[in-house]
Image (cartoon, rainbow, N blue to C red):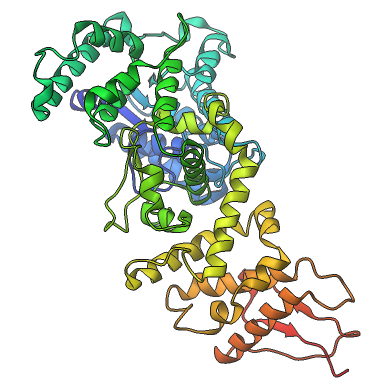
Length: 535
């Protein structure tokens, strides 16, 4: 669709475009959050509309900035449709571009952190489907408005939510939409066949023992792979990457792929899922590998998952999860067909998943049910992640020390950022609030020394121990002595407050009650602590 957009732009016919699959530095790229605003901005940039529509839109946003966080249909009405109606007759419809291109709607990311009205426990898959429906409803609203002069082109895989909306949804006039499957004029099987022939030819050049027979793996095998791909280039690309995985000879890897079994007449995605399952099962410990993948997806959802600045890097994630040296290589080493894994010396890059569909496979309990019986559901993953946070607390950093001590500040900086995200989750923070765990931590190390703590990030680290202050006190009962863990951390925090010049107060309370009074972060200028009066 990028080529089509470029062609329309050159011909002066492109009004606006939005690419959900486009890599971007924005944390909102790929989500619904700025969908309408992006389209409106591009449309009003055209010379024939800028003097009219642009002024209307700008004044609307100035008068009511909250519109940017409202439902997409309301944004569409206020920011585009209403201004178009108001300006009607003041511009020549025949001279401005008429085409709006929306690409990769199936790759729309769940947007649970920004302006989502959905229940936070419903899961990313359901949230993503509802966001897709909201986007389609917004576009339908525009297409049925007489003041809307544009034609909309939507390119997407025919996922069930999208297909049901377009075929069985609220579209009263069937003539409003036209469906076109690429296979009607373009046979992807021919291109997949050429791709496989070219790639296997290159593999034969790299491995001399495969040059005889000359046509390895043979026409019959190529045809079998093309049929299994069912028009999905992702399948063919994944097969080639897996065959190239250096852990075993190419012919052995190919035989492993050919052992994939699917019933006749199954949907194309089931062949792809079967291949994903095959590759995951080729790892030394499939259950552990799948658990790590679910944990990484959890991290992506908690941090936005779009940019290295906001997300956990591959280096940090490996150090965070490892229980022994080299475990990351053991867990992810055989996933080269699905994930690009940064070099050990690269501490800034993220894991790069080659195909969005593999992430959909991980997120969809139905498609990945073969592994979920071993790893459990989201609660099990959450508990596993909490356990890793606990190990980092006890070990004062990664459980396996970093090879280069100079990298420890980088680990701690990302640790604090993630900590601030997880303690905001009531379920996760409740799991962390365990007396035996908190008592095993070196509270004085965590909150008492600038060289150990503030060096990494003064803002997030202070947020860390303030959050910890509230966390350890959560289970203490009113008018009763605080638990040992609460006393341990409270004493360390008081000591750190004195060292850091923070104001602390000592007042007498009823009986021997220890009480921590913590104001909200946004209004807090100092930490107010009450300790017991004289016996």
